[in-house]
Image (tube, rainbow, N blue to C red; front, side):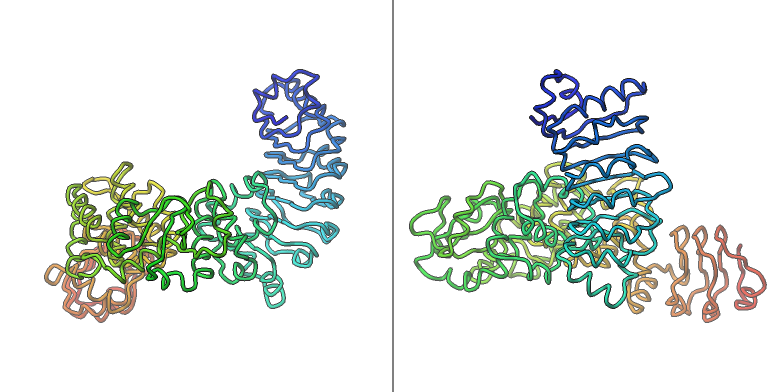
Amino acid sequence: MIIKNDKEFLALKEEDLLKVKEIISVSIFEEHKNKRQHLLSKIARCKNIESLTLYTNGIDEWPSAFFELRKLTYLYVYDLHEDATFFQHIGKLQSLKTLRLYWCSPPDYNWDCLTTLQNLEHLYLQQCTIIDLSPAFAKLTQLKVLDLRKNTSLKKLPAFVLKLPHLQELYVDAKLIRKLKGEEQEALSKLAYFYRNSPTEKKYVQSFQGAFPKYNLTDAHRLLALNLLADDEASIQRLHTRELLIDLTIIPRFDIIRIRAIDYLGKWYSEGATESLADPTTELMIAGKIHTNKNDLRKRLKEVGLVYKTALGANTTHVVIGQSSKIDLNLLKDKRLKLLTEDMLNEYLDQVAPQYLVADEGMSQQLKQLLLAQDENSIELALQLMKEGGIPKNIINELFVAWGGQGTGNLKNRLAKIIRQISSTALGDYVKKDTMLYYPNSRYGRSESSLYTNLRKLEAYKELDTIRIGRILYDLTQKGIKYLLAKMTAEQKVEFLKSLCEGTSLNLSYKELTSLPKELTALTFLTKLNVKGNRLRSYSKHLAKLVNLEELDISNNNINVGKQLPHILPNCKIIS
């Protein structure tokens, strides 16, 4: 019997308690001590329970019967602090293979109480105020997974951790990884998986850890899936097989894993697949969901003489792998069939029969203008043109800005779908969110610092030119100067600063700048410079090169003018 929540559990009769094998979630947040104790005692009478997830706000007493649950192999406890009874007796639960403690801590932060659980294979200690782990943890010789994330007091990864004989997965914060030297780094790289702290991992790893046991897949699948999340090609190359990748193309809930598995199948197991499409006997089948409209794709295939079927037939030669948790694995594992990804098929079609927009650079420029018009009708026209004439990959930045200026709705979803057709897996996953990059036609907009942070995050997606996007956003919103002046090349900064000038005046007020760019000194023609209301903490001696400067406004900053600034600019009026 599987119990999903408190309501189901509380409704159980006494005679049903022995039937319980798994409690997915039960919370002990009752205000009254007696009610909390009654609930915990009831759990302790589930003698056949194997898996328990328990949310608490502190428990006064743990019944001794709880520590006699001999079949308990999985235990998750949330929010338990300095509970002497629990940590004193947890060593009796020798059947435990997985222990997850989140936001918990033993008395005096002494974790040695866990070292007697010598059958543990998975130990998760997130946000548990760990100051140090003693060498006694080396006794956990069966440990395969260790998670120590979000323990800010842990200053160094203990040396014994990387010597645990069966350790496969390690999760620690980036600061601890950076401190590893020489042999430690080498030992880390030999693990089947370690947490890289990438945006994709931060988004998915937690839920994947919890969901994976439900999929009935092997450790080999798990380790490969984690490295797909990290997009670590070297580890994927070492761990993968064709069959493992194919299995992961149908894993439920995690599109990002499925898509990356498909990408690597195309990369490593599709040799000669596109070249053989020219064979007159070729017959295509599409397995699963693709981003390209299938009716539009059917027309394109017909134009180049390719036969397309919706089901596997006796004459099928090629399978285009799409996303689906319902694809027939036996179909994909038939080695007589050549595997293609959607991207590979579209690239082939663009080569043999390019659509007019893909082939015409001038038309691409018109598309960019339509996408940036901040007008739904113009964007709709651009979408219609791309439906008929193809999607040039060089409009990805403009497409992204158009998507980022939309709220929720059909138009945003359609823009996201097109981006997914021509972008990487990671960016395709990002645009599934309803994030607003900027707010068009609104007096409420992102601050310079907020836009700076967003653009910094977008640097992870290599197909995006974030400087180009920043320049577009500045033209649309007059925001983005902070990012552009931080990331542009010296030459680009000079040209950008010149474009901001009005005659011999330059206004950089209220741009949340913490320093002035050195490239300002190239603007020797300036007579007036306004940097009021920023976050400047100092001024540069290079300002002396602005020999024609007559007025400098540095008010509302954290600058002490002192005696030096008037000395540097003796003929300049300084407003402070």
